[in-house]
Each structure stands twice: as structure tokens, then as C-alpha cells.
Image 1 (cartoon, helix red, strand yellow):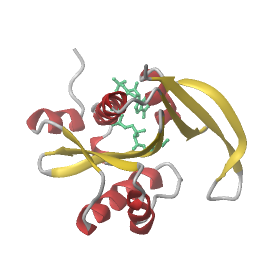
Image 2: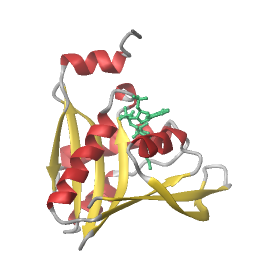
Image 3: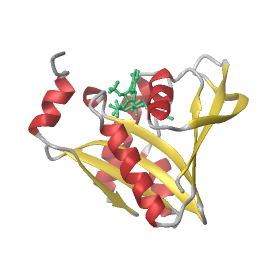
Length: 170
Ligand SMILES: CC(C)(COP(=O)(O)OP(=O)(O)OC[C@H]1O[C@@H](n2cnc3c(N)ncnc32)[C@H](O)[C@@H]1OP(=O)(O)O)[C@@H](O)C(=O)NCCC(=O)NCCS
């Protein structure tokens, strides 16, 4: 059997706890922005700053799913639900904790919450060159339903498509 990755070893010593919040302290928002910047920076995309995260969380229809391990924040998702439709707005996992199932846990937790709150569809958008995220969503049974041509602007001024994924929650 293959050996454990460093992240898996850390996780087996400190199990992951996933929880839902509809608001966050300044300290938590600062941690989220730092995870986001670091995770997205590593794939040449811009991370969100504190103000962007704070503003989203002010919206009554938005909520945060937070993963914690060993007493620290290791990943999160922001999503919004309007009637029976939900949208994953962003998802990021601490770089050193990736490939240990944290994003999968966050997505499962979020979907169980949404099902409990009568959502029947979940959508998301991902850059067509974000292979890790695409692999994750496909492993989690999302299906590609549309393409938005040249939707995202890259750091060097190029354009890249957005792939729209969705799944039924019913
Ligand atoms: C995409 C991201 C959230 C995945 O988080 P993660 O906690 O590492 O993902 P998981 O460990 O739960 O992965 C579950 C499955 O997804 C797929 N997957 C995840 N990362 C992958 C990668 N880098 N390459 C290939 N497949 C990957 C695999 O099938 C994996 O299962 P396996 O490890 O048993 O093979 C993380 O890489 C990240 O934060 N990236 C930067 C931000 C980002 O792209 N967010 C999504 C924007 S839409």
C-alpha cells in the first residue's frame, strides 16, 4: 500500500471538523483570506482579500463552510442559496493540507446542509485550466453543463473559458 502524504499524516493525527457559519470574526476573515490567497496564488489566480469575503458574508443568502484540523483553519467554501438553487462561490484548501480529502469533506457537508434546506440544484464555475478543481468536481459527481467562452482574465492578460458544472441534489 502506498505511504501517506504529509497532509494525510497530519490529518490522521488531528481529525478534520467541518462546520457552518453565517458570519465570521475579523480574525477568522483574515485567516480565510490568507488561505485563499495562498491556494489561488499557487495556480496563478488572484486570491480574495478580507473585504471581498466580509462583503459576501454580509449577504443573508451566503454562508461559510469551514474545515478545522489540529486547532487551525485548513480550508473553506463560501456558497449562496436562493430558493431551491445554490451556487458554490469559492473553495480553497491550505496548500500544505491538500490531497487529504478536505475539499471533498467540505463539499459533502455543504451538500447535506443544502439538501436539508430544500435546495435541489447546485452550480459552480471553474476555470478550464484549473485541473485540480475540475478533477475534484468530477470525482464529486458534478457534470459540466455549459461553457462561458473567455470568461476569466489571466494575470498575463489572456482569456480563459469558465466551465459551468452542476448537480442535482434531489
Ligand atoms: C481544488 C482544491 C480545493 C482541492 O482541495 P483538496 O482538499 O486538495 O481536495 P481533496 O483532497 O478533497 O481531493 C478529492 C479528490 O479530488 C481530486 N483532486 C483534488 N486535487 C487534485 C489534484 N491536484 N490533481 C488531481 N486530482 C485532484 C482527486 O480525485 C481527489 O481524490 P484523491 O486524492 O483520492 O485522488 C485545492 O487544490 C485548492 O484549494 N486549489 C486552489 C483553489 C481552487 O482551485 N479552488 C477551486 C476553484 S473553482
